[in-house]
Length: 97
Image 1 (cartoon, rainbow, N blue to C red):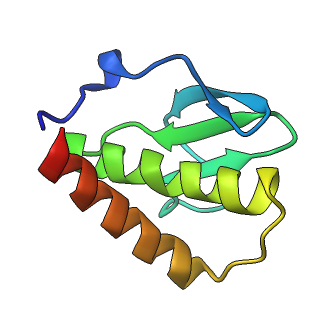
Image 2 (image 1 turned 45 degrees about the vertical axis):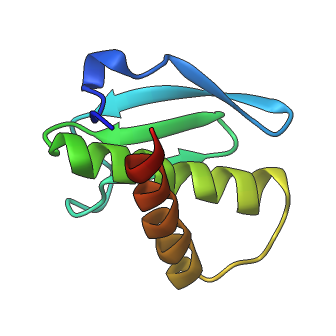
């Protein structure tokens, strides 16, 4: 699979019954180390500019996992599990698309 560039990302995604906008941002409030966040109130997935194509794609997968599992299906999961699902989905997509 060829990793998408920032310009190739859709403007929004359906997560469950909701549509989340995808936004690229320069900074996150309160933490310079944050690479992404899923905001269920604003229905947005925010991804930090300046990451490699690989890291951007992994961040998107990670935030989709948060959105689907925690916010749209109300499943309580540990952050460690989200990282594991992110890695598994990333590798699956790379291997098969």
